[in-house]
Image 1: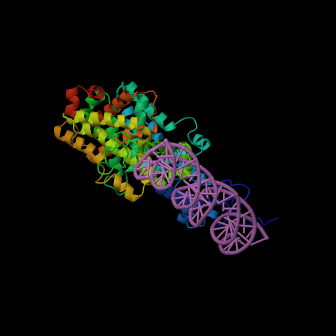
Image 2: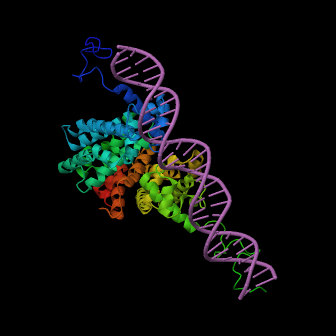
Image 3: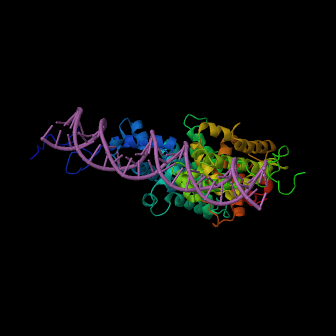
Length: 234
Length: 234
DNA sequence: TTCAATCCACTGACCGAATGGTAGAATGAA
DNA sequence: TTCATTCTACCATTCGGTCAGTGGATTGAA
């Protein structure tokens, strides 16, 4: 029998976080894995997925490329992990806006702020998700968007609610508009840089102003006192 | 006198260079080159530039990959030709809108229609231009956007004119808004497909409606009788 | 009309370098 | 002694690109 005393965690002991499996720690360190994935993301952003070699990744980490395969079974695993994590996190980040109490106009504003804030805070992975999603195998693409695009569905839901409430123009095409709005917001990945001219807050306010006035109904504009009033926050 | 009929060739001296058009040709046939470039564009769209091998291209054309180099000096030449041609053509396509007589609102509407119409009509090359521009070498990137981004400049010009005329909100950030508008329009490449639900005309009208009401001034909205009136064409 | 020269368009074999990935040995902390 | 981690050496394949050669069409001079 191996000694039971010394072999608890690998440093800390007993009171770890989880009722972990039979052994101290099995397999690679998840924190180290995250480091490597982050390094891969940085390279993917600059060179593109197909333009990045496994050696590029290992160079960025500071190891030899053979060592990567202790953490991962294939190069595609990197891309998959990057995209899956950021996609799931993005969905979580907009949830509060979707479930907000209040009219659709308020929820749409909150949605824009949440989305823009998330995109900026996770700019590298978010950009990769947009640019390289199609490089994943069909199976893995499905694994991520299982059950359709929840993101678009949430936005469409807000737009429809707003039409019912009379704050959004009933004549706009909801499906088209949701795509157009999301396309507009996501385009920030093409030019936004941290330490740029606009703060994140101003960026989100500018986007929200454009988005909301672009679809507000006559009555919503009137009760706000003109589109320019609607455009400035609140 | 030499017979006038048989000697259409360039054998004769002097009066050659220009209108010859008939038989003799120097170097590769430009029409065939265009065919090959088109085939390359189709493959680039599906697999991405870095994901496409020269063999993929030659397969699509129906020749061996060595033969490609009769028409081109490198794989990057394909990408460069695709992007350069579509970029120049796009600039030409919006020129009439920019130079239009009339107020900025009318010119912006014309700009959107021209841009969307061009993008749809040249969907493959246009999409590649957006997605793969950064894969070009710095020198070739410069060769294309020499003198700054004329496209953005044109759009910013219209926005500024509109602010001066009082039809666009004087408080909007012109640089930001130009990027946001262009980002919104270009996002159509991610979901628009010919034979889709929307006709090109409806597509452009929808976009123009969103874009214009998103920045219209209070007075412009008022004189139109509400944003919904502004949203529907004219 | 003939014929040798030239050109076009493409083939197919080949190059060195780089690719993603594997297996086993070495390292080193607990 | 265990075992997580990394290194070293190596694999088959593919990559972009080169180049001599080829067959058929076209040419201009005789």
